[in-house]
Length: 267
Image (spheres, rainbow, N blue to C red):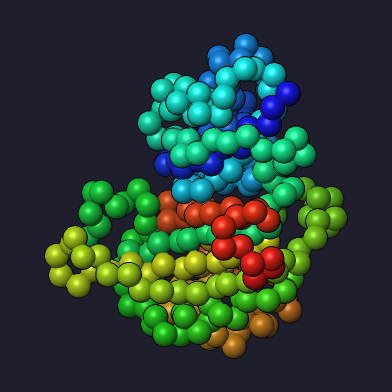
């Protein structure tokens, strides 16, 4: 029995998220179908996280166990030959039997891109949220840093749809890095740029990153102040924070494991 770790990138536009859903196109479903074709078995694929409908990934990780004799390189070539071009396996490798893509992850990094030019390029619109209206970058950057550390993120997460699950789940999360940066779009005319929110943490609640970005945009518009972030943590009321931003600006950039190059333990 071999355990295969996959690192993948995908354009989430045409998928109803990562996790298999009956009658819906999903990334996990597409990979499972190809794997069944290759092994003649319906095997379990464990993902590091569940990206939602329309959310992209540059470094999603999954693993599966199989008795098939194909090597990791052969699996990678076969997947990329049979998967839709919107999903690519960028790496495949053998890992120890106890490796689990979700439970062994020590950190995840997400990025949310806000395009600040007047007109979005047709080559960018799938991957950014367009906001050409007045925003104060400096106060947004100040507010972003307020999310670092350990906090109760009830105000920044969506309901599961079940009162019992909402009551029982742990809402405390640890954020190692939370920052806004400016990136010039050199291939576009004028002074177009992107504002990129980057957040790195151990784990995330559903819609958490998109709610954080929506709150930062409210700060940028003057509806909230950076000092209000601490108050929102205390309120534990998702109706008081900013809106949930659209999915296309969000990308799962990286999943880290104890042996990830450059990983420093906890930070």
